[in-house]
Image 1 (cartoon, one colour):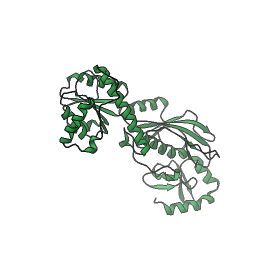
Image 2 (cartoon, rainbow, N blue to C red):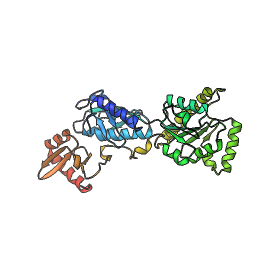
Image 3 (tube, rainbow, N blue to C red):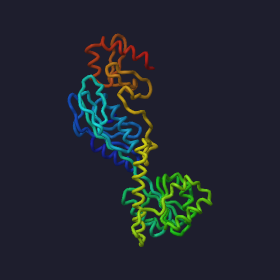
Image 4 (cartoon, rainbow, N blue to C red):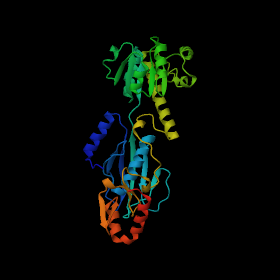
Length: 354
């Protein structure tokens, strides 16, 4: 765990945003003594489980990390309570038992931050250029592809692709593709979009033209299942005529579809639309004992937490044996009554590889 200063946490957060990496910010919203955390204390959890900052000692750390990773996977914020206090269940709060012998209580708010989806705009028409600008304004990461790339030079896009190449599309990693060719290589662009790995393809076209292009895609061998990913006309009907108005409607369609896709995957409990590949799947968190540390492991005889022996900071030599603890409070509790925990430690040793 890295105890970064608030300034360095903000700098790390900004760097992760710039690198389009997911993360979660954890804020302590209640701290009941005895606890080393305080209201307003913050930490940042990266997709590999690295925690920066301070939100309490070792007893809460593993619970917080796993809850943060679950929030990153779902894309949804959550409240977490770690306490042995007798309180009524709250459907809006994820409750965990405080495993540390010192008790205390913590409540935390976890806010995941996911990189915005990549939108790939196909075409160099005036409407396509306007769509690139509007999509950036509403928070998408925007790339473009067209036969002529010069028109995009002043737009500051992440990537501009020459032509309509499926492999190049997939390297850009778009979740959504907006086809705005409007008569310039329509079939070539739409086929490449549908053969890409994008979750959905939106087409700026009238209903009549969209139907004709669907027929053309069938003749080109696009399967019906993939054609179902095509949304045309793009966006809601706003009676648009000018390129700016047409682009506005198309980008509104992108926004609506983005939220629909994110909600559908969140409801299904699968990784969110953006940034999910960086977050490993974990089993649901039931207790501290369910969190397995890598490498050699030892079960804390006081609270049952799995300890990474190589990284253990709280170690006690007693009776010719070494005992490992998640925090100083558990070590002190063991020292108060070692006989009580020796049998527990012996049983855990038989059940764990060390």
